[in-house]
Image (cartoon, rainbow, N blue to C red):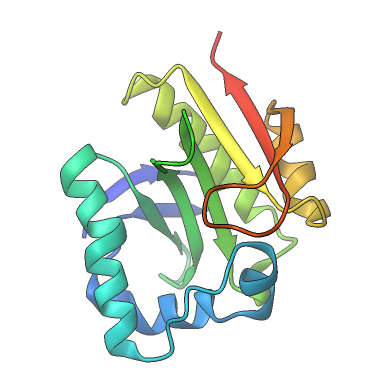
Length: 171
């Protein structure tokens, strides 16, 4: 595991199969399933496979992925934040999710702001996308506070529900 981004309270680090229990809890949280999607992962083995084939493979192949948000104070894994290249989107997408007990404490905002800076300064990305459920008020508010502009309401390939598509362009 490697620390990619450091903020005042967090380390954003690469995910490993040792994070499977945390990852499994996060993707099975009812808010994750409602606001993001049901990944259908129910066992530690499935979580490990998804980590290897998803974030670990992306980090190796394209140089970025979703990162574990880990609190500096105690090393607690509290969520994910990072960048995803989806075939269904023209631009790289910023993504984030928190375990329920860590919502509302500013962690997502802190991690997302640092991820924006990293995307621009280290990866030289000039445009980003952000997607969220129209019903997810907190996530819509966060993207707007970061400077993302709502571009469209779309149904992404393979999905059956509306998704707010935001865009962000670095100056």
